[in-house]
View 1: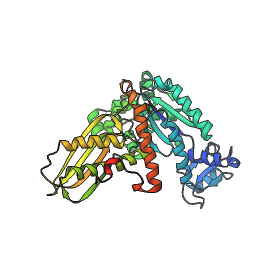
View 2: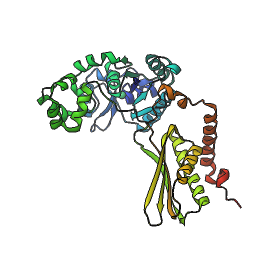
View 3: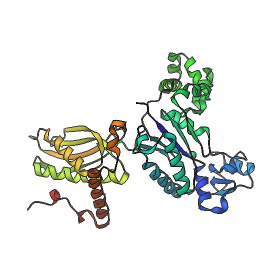
View 4: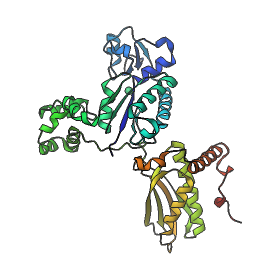
Length: 390
Ligand SMILES: [Mg+2]
């Protein structure tokens, strides 16, 4: 199935947030950055960019270029807050969002047309919602992979919406300055110049062996890019590879009831953390350490991602059943990982529809319990099996 990836980039984000929060700054050259005169520009409004002010430029230089500029300090906490509101809007369109920075995200919208219309419809809806709810503009690129989605979002800034259809990829490659390719910095650019490469398309003219010798792994990746290939998946919250918990037992045991309670308590902790982050994983892992400190792990990958305590618990108990329990154990761990593998193809769509009644009610119950526990402490509510059977 052809993938459809959307890349969203907020326009002059920090400066736009400052203008949104303070009407007096609207339409003015706003420069966000160190106000001491040292330091560099973190962001410049489009009005300031007209004077040649760019991010990463030393402040003193920005002052020279734009003496009438309004210099304001960085308010990172505020930008993160607005960023969360942007991501919350995206979250309603697809479960597969990879936030790459405070103002940038990839969204896998493959197979979402039935729910939300064409890719452009989705992009227009997102832009409209961000404009209406947050009074901010963004630029969106749509393409068959992440690389070209990102390149597309750059093409018509600000307030852009650009699609690179699969049939147009070759044309874009031919004309794209190679320093516009993500990952190509100064050093790589120097190398590429000596290889006679100015556009992404020209990477193909360099013999593959030479490219690999000169640029290593990145050369291989660049070559794929020059052929229009980028298989990198949209990875849900890329910083986290797994959410897990493990606990050393009070004393070594193979008592099934003690192990069961321990697994339930840990499934609860892992599920709660996943739900708090809005994450779901496909792979569930049970980890055990024997009395002699040797360790064993058992994993299973589900067809659909989960963050349900109940599912994590049931599956982990199934894994425990497969373990030889002659030995005593000193440590038990439960983990959930593999947040990206369950890409929503059309055949999997139902798994991602959060309104599915049965699943939703479970999740709602668990979410409500999380809130109560946060407010009243861990002991406020316990599932039946956790209460010691007298
Ligand atoms: Mg941006």
